Amino acid sequence: MEQELLKLIENKGSQSWHQLALRANELLGTNFHGESLRDKYRRSLQHKKHLMKSIKDQVAGDIESSHTKHDSTELTKKYKKALETIDNLQTTLDSFRAVKPISTYRIEPQKKSGTNEAVAVVLASDQHIEERVRPEDVNQKNEYNLSISKQRQEEFFRGALRLTEVCGKDVQINTMVFALLGDFITNDIHEEFPEITELPPVKAVIECQNRLASGIEFLLKNSKLNLVIPCHSGNHARTTEKTRNATEAGHSLEYFMYHQLANHFRGEKRVKFLISESYHSYLEVLGLTIRFHHGHNIRYGGGIGGLTIPVNKAIAQWNKLRWADLDCFGHFHQRIDGGNFLANGSLIGFNAFALSIKAGFEEPSQTFFLVDKKRGRTCVWPILFKQNPACRN
Image 1 (tube, rainbow, N blue to C red):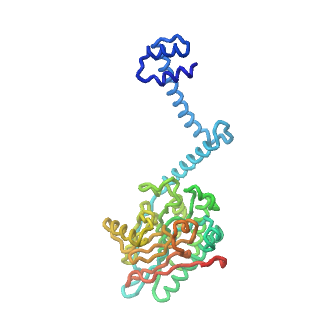
Image 2 (cartoon, rainbow, N blue to C red):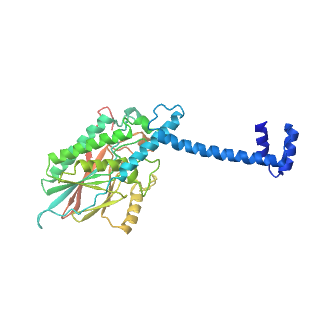
Image 3 (spheres, one colour):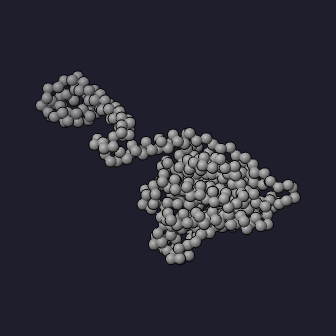
């Protein structure tokens, strides 16, 4: 009878409380007055408000107690997972807040006037080290996994040094700009990604930073080069569901990784990290102004004209704010020399996503180019990698 009475009250409409009491007495055999029904309605509202406040307080209490309660019988599995995610994100956020930015500087010629000099520039991006690509998923065009990604990364460092040595036979090269432009991991930002990745995000970042540190040590040990390392976060390593603009760096696992690397090499005088907090960073190399970024702020819908048209539109707008002679970015897994821009390829190469969007096949590659003191940007070469013989190119 209680539920039926409350239902009558909720459907009161324009009836007066006296009319409602008469109807309730007729239907339910009760003996209510209008005022007593109104009081009962108010008590019901107060009870609901108290219940909602109690639920809100319980959620806050559950978050606090989840650190110590490993076997809580009061929470569902999904609720436990949500609490763990909130706690992990808060810990990551606290770590980011403790990191301080690094200031930039100019690279000046080291040789006297009349002696030619150049700077080698290497672009590293879109390596997705923990993602798995099975040959059968891409018509036997590619294969990729943790082992292959490590092999390709090692080939990448050897190739970058080899090309620098080749160019160094004709011109003095004292510095390499080794640009880390993001998307070194795939992460689990989409529902399907945990099914195609071989490491969870944090372990993937740790593996990647160890490999990059090994590569930097390889360059230092096998050359006399000074290394300038601009760093940009990609869109894959974020800890948020959607990409953010003003606070992107603060929600990026790669931003944290770059600071870990900078701390590891803090005592090495030949290494300088330039970790960007904004979408762009600028570096003047022997008179050539280069603008670095990951590339995900270029809006490309796969239209007629390909990537060139949206890139040039974006560059025209950015140059109104600050001029750059050359833009270097990744993100699109396409290696393109557009004259005023260089789009980097990818280490992972062709995958199921590329197949689904009808992207043209492209072998895995990264980019090497030279900035000459007298001639500006000169040679642009791909760094290519060995393929599984079973894959048909």
